[in-house]
Length: 222
Image 1 (cartoon, helix red, strand yellow):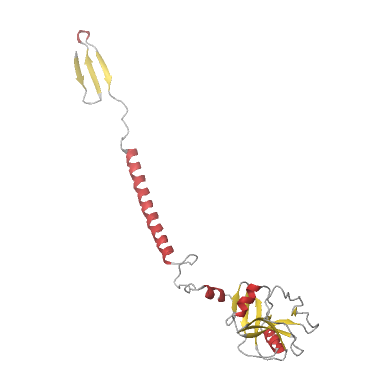
Image 2 (image 1 turned 120 degrees about the vertical axis):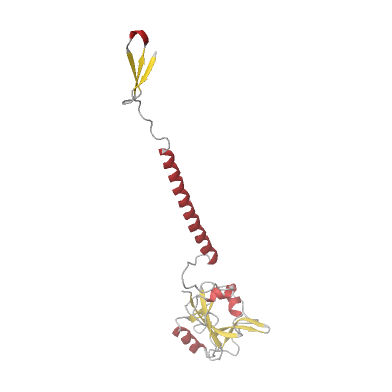
């Protein structure tokens, strides 16, 4: 058998010998698609993912750096917020006006001057406040430490021995601490109340309303 190749085509002729005939074998097989086309796409996609991951890592590091440099709740800006207050007392006083002191949800003002009961009451009213009303022993302990003697908002002018706060509510004598032997209405006419912090004389006291002393104003925390 003889095999012949035709230069003008992609066909092969086969001589089957004595018969003298040819059998043509076609080599026009479909060309295979490029093997690396999909591989190139995968490599390109992987490269883009790596670039994206690197960008995200940089952004995350910048965010963490900013967070570590500023206190919680403080946003980054060109102007830094004031430094946090250092003590509990400073944090409490921050929410009251200048010259006032905070205790729980109330603000207190101790007058640097002295006056009688009625002038003291009017001064507090001019400040949008009232002479202090003491609600419990804890509040009384706080007020006792503010000054040696000061007017508070209680009186028994309407009826001797029946002490009322300026808002008309009854003073609970058993709930609060009175100074030793008080109230005693000494020599008559001691109808206004004050708070004392003096040697061997600590607690509530009754005095003449014309007496001169400091006073304590009170108003709600805003």
